[in-house]
Length: 287
Image 1 (cartoon, one colour):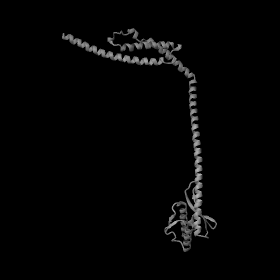
Image 2: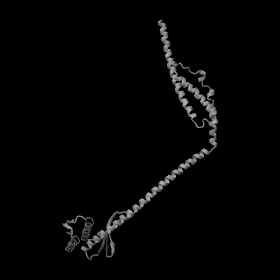
Image 3: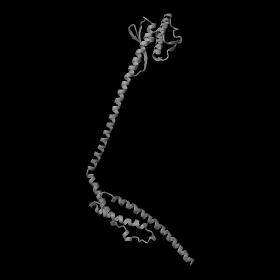
């Protein structure tokens, strides 16, 4: 009896292994069937599928779907369900089931040959590409026009700003130079140095600096050191400072002077004092 039991256990073990292999194969079949049905359903969804000229292809595909669906259905059936599985002859896929592949291959070959002879597709592609390129060019031209208009507007604004800036600077320099010349001539009456003025240095509306020009014996001379003595330079520097007080110190009516006439003779000192009393009577002078 023990030997019979051992034999039975060995048979059960072998059956278990066989069942596990069978279950694994069955799951593989189910997965493959589902995947193949999806592919065939994709073909059946084509808009030309139900046309009369595709009838042989349609029948072949439908037959394949039926057979493969039977594989999927039988694979999901449980042994205890009581349902019978399909007969082997129904499930077996034959070579004739795939004969339609020859028809499809010949059709594909014919289409490829026709496309090689027919340039319509190439022409259409070229026309489509040219159209896209043309539309992009028109779009870029519109954007370019907008940017050019903006640039032109900004250029007009900039040129007007530079013009006004230059006019304002010239007006200030003219007024400032006139004040310097008045103060200088007040302290140096009757001398050969006339019409002292500040002159901007630069080209193309670019201010690189300033210099001083004046008339000496009817000729324009620059810089002042060319003929000015130390006393004349001091007079000019003092005139520049006093003109700056008038131009830039409009709120606070005072100025600080620190030993500015040490190099002046008595005549220039008197004229400087007269200038202060006459031109700056309303200023507080800290000396």
